[in-house]
Amino acid sequence: MKEHPRIWLISLGIILFGLVLISRLYLVQVVEGANYSAKANQQYIRPTDNLFDRGSIFFQTKDEKLVAAATIKTGYFLYVNPKKTDNAESLYAALSKYLDLDKDSFIAKASKKDDGYEEIVHRLDETTADSLLKLALPAVALHKETWRYYPGNHLAASVVGLMGYKGDEFAGRYGLEKQYAAALDRDSSELYSNFFAQIFDGVSRVFKNEKRQGDLITTIEPNVESYLERQLKKIDDEWHPKEIGGIVFDPVSGEIRAMAVFPTFDPNDPQAEKSSKIFSNPLVENAYEMGSIVKPLTMAAGLDAGVVKASTTYYDAGTVTLNGRTFSNFDGKGRGTVSMQEVLNQSLNTGVTFVMQKLGKDLFTSYFKNFGLGEKTGIDLPSESGGLVANLDSPRDIEHATASFGQGIAMTPISTARALAALGNGGFLVTPHVVKTINYRVGLSKDSAIPAPKLVIKKETSEEITRMLVEVVDKALLDGKVKMEHYSIAAKTGTAQIANPSGGGYYDDRYLHSFFGYFPAYHPKFLIFLYAKEPVGAKYASATLTMPFIDTAKFLINYYEIPPDR
Figure 1 (cartoon, rainbow, N blue to C red):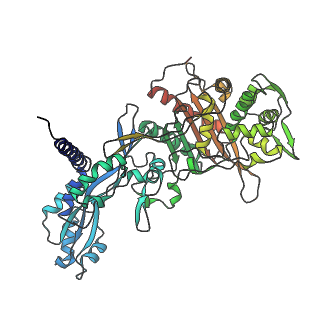
Figure 2: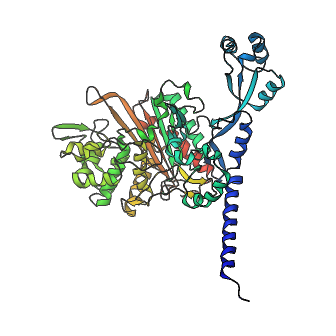
Figure 3: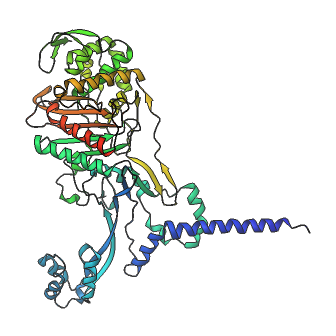
């Protein structure tokens, strides 16, 4: 007997409906189960209010264990009904056994006989709330509440960011809280939508991803971040700079393991800060004249173009005059005939000017722009600055000469670190990033979409400039005292004069110190970038930043169990 086609159609329809129903039940019970549970708990107390909800942000250890960086904390707040308060003094006496209350403020609120609702204290833990409930005070009530909580306090605060009000809107204002607001935000109003309407809408939501709400898994390693922050604090204790920053990242993948600024803040207590400027991230937002750490970029450009070799020599008179302006080496002294290797070893301004002149202004400018100087890196943090490199477009030689040793052009620390990473990773310009994966509420996950690296110098150039920078560490940096016998490290210091915005020119006694290095040099796992603005008591970065760099490098080598490379 032949079956009727309509039976097949009806059967197929039932199966499809069942799949839709199961899909939506999964979304409601599993994905949104916690939200519904919280709403059910709350509606018996204040059915008109929604509990605050937001996606979480996680750090990730080297063993891929997740550590909460930003989450939701649950507690209680207490309010009194003055209309039911017979004696405000006795009520204060009962509550003050468990709470730290300002007596005058409490009495004033509890005495408003025409008012039925006065909030007294927020964010009580469950133990305290239970103790207060046992008092059975008719004028007192407790409500459940949730709020944004940062378990690490100041840890990576400039990366994580914080929530804040702008007018009546409470939203992410800095860091990842702002950059990934679309993924972290929760629309609590959808909890009131009709259940069966959600069933029929469920599958379209899954596949269209109309609600791309999820949790962030970052590349920040909490132990590395903590160590870096301790190093910055040591620099502050010894040299008292106005500002210090540091970055630790993988120069091959662009994944940032640590990013820190000092002074910093606790996002759990933003009201403690006198100025909102502290919430910004100068590593991404501010541009600085970086000084001599730019010299390896100039040298790499000369090597790549074939206009110089490490053995190429020039005559160093100690000074150079271009377009009527004279500049000198850091000590004003000439060295006579010296090689390009010695230009890096002794950090000679005249030497990199020689390389720039061999390249010519146009080719020199092309290399620097290909290194990404003056452009945004595309890092997934808000308010990134592009830097100030207009001097590269000058028709005069003097602006290109000063740019060759890192003066007259200003870059963000993250842009500088990315350019320097190309020296060690085979010649590629990578995209630095701090989010690795977004885990969506619907059960799906998505890795960050990172642009493909861009080749800016040849692999052979990367190997040669690395070899030259290894010699800088082995022989020149603190006279070779920090050389590591079994590990090759490529590094360079930088000391830049700080521009005087009011009088023009530069201050004679204010400097920006910087330091970068990568290791193991020929197959680098890490690049460390450090800077200190206006340190006190030391003129050169070799004094202030060498040991913090070396100590951090040793920590990373031990922590990640990196095998020796020599």
